[in-house]
Amino acid sequence: MEPTHFEQLYPANTRFQEIKRVIETLRAGRSCQVIGIPGVGKSNVLRLLPYNRSVREEHLGQDEARYHFVYMDFSEVRERNLFDILKFILISLSYSLSERRMMEEQEVVNNFLKEALEFEDELIFFQGLKKSVDYLAKEKALYLVFLFDRFEDYIPNIDSHFFLNLKLLRNRVKYHFSSVFAVTRPVEDVLEPAIYGEFHEFLIGNNIYLPIKDEPGLSFRFKYLEELTGKKATDAVKKEVEKITGGHGKLAKLAYEAILADPEEKNIQKLILSKPQIIGALFEIWNFLTPEEQSDIKDKSENEFLERANLLEHGKISIPLFAAFVDDLPKDENGAKLTYDATRNEIYKGNETLTEKLTPSEFRLLRHLMTNSDRVCEKDEIIQAVWSDSKTREGVTDQALDQIVYRLRKKIEDDPNNPKFIHTVKGRGYKFNG
Image (cartoon, rainbow, N blue to C red; front, side):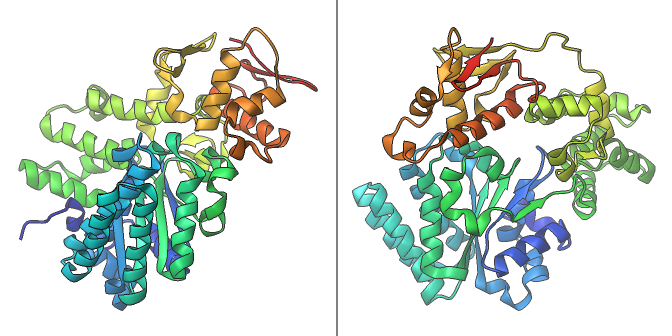
């Protein structure tokens, strides 16, 4: 039988230590975050859980059949409202049951789904989701795990109701419900506590950072490419690819593809850097970094987050190919300017779009400061502009605003300790300097 999902082909020891930590967290009834830089394989980790039985058996043993993993790619619903999200989750749950041939269970969930579709109401859909979770966890004694892949794509549109709903589901069935979030940065670093607060006790601090390299997974990908192309490089060449790319999943795959397509080229790094796909993957990593992190990378300074994410090791870049790429980047002596395009409702730094890197509150704050750059914006005024809804504004303090400014500076300033764009006016508020 042909595999339905590519992840079925991976060996059971793929990402062994990281999946072991995920399973330990789930067994304790908690949720967790799988964190890694772009291209390192976060999606691969999440997809191994529902689609690779040998991986599940390796880590869950006899309990394998009791755990039900529901994979969801949140890049598909990145600009959707909560109503669409609930519909997406319920549909994904139904589909996951069909993939495991759990036809009786799927029929029950489908009936809840059909009832909700008749009304097209957010509350009714959540009721259908609660009934489904109750049925699967209580009657069928399953441990449900929602896998939220590419969760950062949804963050710009998220509100506190999303995490409140997760808490309500968890409270109904206790240890039989958990979630795993695949993100490039921890949720607590990019969202205000008011948004994830309802789910804080189950999620925050349970962070699993992915190493750049996974030897079993990388060996499998090389072997798969060889079988696909009918070509093979020497062990020495493959070791050189691993060394140059640091074993980074996406870069190593693209690099080996390039070598198999052009085996006569002896200068491996030159060949690799001539490929647009590889340059694109390197820019993906670079553009993911904040200005402060880019500065630390260039200056070979230590950075706590990048050390945890394994891109830096004692201030040294762990991917030699990326280090060479950074060294070749043109110098920007004056620094890029921030601009706001009112037509598109987008904020740019130079030619880079910043909007997707900002949380909704950060975006509203920066937009307000930029559109009022000719004057000092008082703190009360800013709070009213950023937390425009009276309910969300209740209890917001000057300290909460200062925290947002602190996080925003880390994302837009080359040196957050000496800000160029957002200046503090003591005793009053903030002023934007373009």
